[in-house]
Length: 625
Image 1 (cartoon, rainbow, N blue to C red):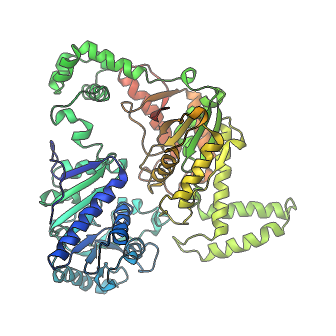
Image 2 (cartoon, rainbow, N blue to C red; image 1 turned 90 degrees about the vertical axis):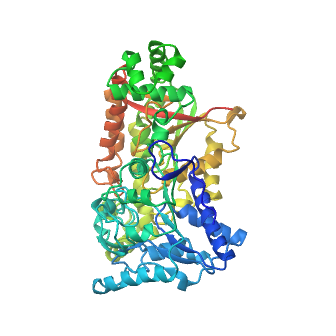
Image 3 (cartoon, helix red, strand yellow; image 1 turned 135 degrees about the horizontal axis):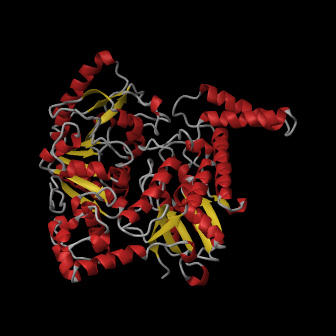
């Protein structure tokens, strides 16, 4: 079998690592390698044994395998599979079960015999669990061992459900889930309280016996743990570090997940680099942080002690270099007077609150500058509404009806159906259409209230309700032509000069990334007014902010402007206090925003630039051609 060809391990990397720019390319690369293993085994008269993972990360791999089966004749008739893990207790038919996940997302669309599929049983009583785990290990041995094991990585560094403290000799067993793991799974189960406290997982030793291991990670939120796994010491508290001891392990990362590796974050520490302008800015800002000095105070000795002498040599002197970087950062600051005026602007908001959370400050400034602004909400966000909010709104309508403000028969039947459904609803059940619609309307009303706070009128809001989101579940359908067509029509109706797009790809369920895909496809051959495509500015959501070194524009906010932005966020009452999907950061969205915007301004102050109260950051992705 042909081994994968990852790039050489630079610097302190202890696991071979492939970084790709295109998120979807990971799925193609990994599926191609799996196909090579399958075909090589078939050609030798044998059968491939695959270890498989669940979750959002390998979905792209499975879709590509399905395509290869349907279009290229890749056969799975002799393939044997073993899944990593399963929650316990868990009915195989539950929408939360990995058994159902694998059949819906892969096996049902292949020619693999059901008898060849092995998934840990989450419905086995605890009294029989030890025997079940032993049988699972024996089945792997009887199949000839795993040829290729597919893995993801959790925020604690777990592989499978091998939580912190898992031993190197551990085998398939029942484990207690770490608090962080349960928090990360809360969205899928509509609340942390609904996440099972235990799971069955292959052990570290079982995983390491695979002949080849491919581990995948995508998104900025995985960057820290990826660096820990790839560059850190082997540690029982981070199970992924054990992979450093496996001779055929390859990490596949998208650019955001690999952003903190030394070769990406500080490549000058790995070896000689070509000092492009953007890299120069990054290096000098890094040096300023390392030394605790403002940029204009950096000396020759500072550069020499931090392996940056070649940068000074290229620039002529520390003073000249410091000045260039200082001026470059200062030129990125854009107050209201330097922002667009009298233009047509579209802000695409993946969820009904991303607009005010991420760019509430600039929206207010653009309103004051006389721009014609449309806020296009791409999904309903109805999954992020608690059932008690539905009951509260229905109670309000019933009270209106009781006082004869609205006809009683207009609410009676709707209320009956909703009450009956909610009374029998179990955690994770898909809402009936009536409940989905009520939740959608609640979020639409909050969105309108939010932009009204910033000075926009109700007519500025457009609710696209893209089909990919309308599954009623956390997992969404792929973006297809119907989604792209809706976005394209919005562009053609408004013919914007400027488009704002969520460039934050780390939201918990990938909705931001999928919305950006729909926009990118809609913009591919689009030309607006005057035959010129609009300029695209990327903002980031509630999870990360653009670093000052990456930002194209830095937009200052006064104390009053930040307060107004937070007031707009408050209008999203269903997301306040306790949001259904808060992600790993337990703070409320407005608290994250306040800290992030003040933090960006504080960073510029520490670098020696002008001091501002708060600041938003944007990256210009496309300019008019």
